[in-house]
Image (cartoon, rainbow, N blue to C red; front, side, top):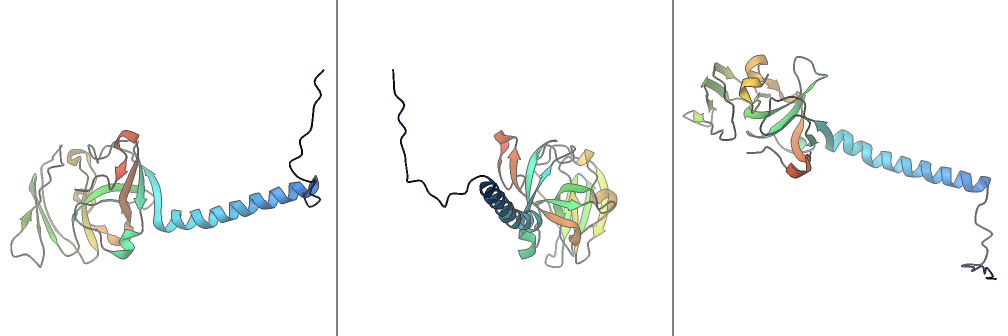
Length: 198
């Protein structure tokens, strides 16, 4: 018959908690871990980055319905948004909704849309410049001219024929911009930094 032998790894430690003491020690460790996690994660989630899922087709082909994005909320506290960047913002007509669009016009500029052509004029230029938007696959024909205030942006979806944007509801106030599309996490085959920036 085989005899079982016990192997001791240490001397018995009388300071090791048992029973009720072990329960309270584990509960305290769990609470402490949770508190540390909240103190680290919450500020990141509120002030630095937050996740969004694309819903709708207004940014096709750049972003498809169901894609998972991380939005950088910090950059625009350090600098102004730039033309061509893709931003997430609160919809001006209902601030409970979030939209994703591309910045076309910057504060102080005049945007003129003539058919499929978009031109931009600002105080630094003598002539209007025509935007090169080679990333647009589905154009729409509009006629519009709008001058932006000192804290207003003109935004449009990349799927122009199916986008509710500044052409329909006017300029976007800067205070409604949440941040820029920083990271695409899903689908994995298209994951990458600064998706959609042209």
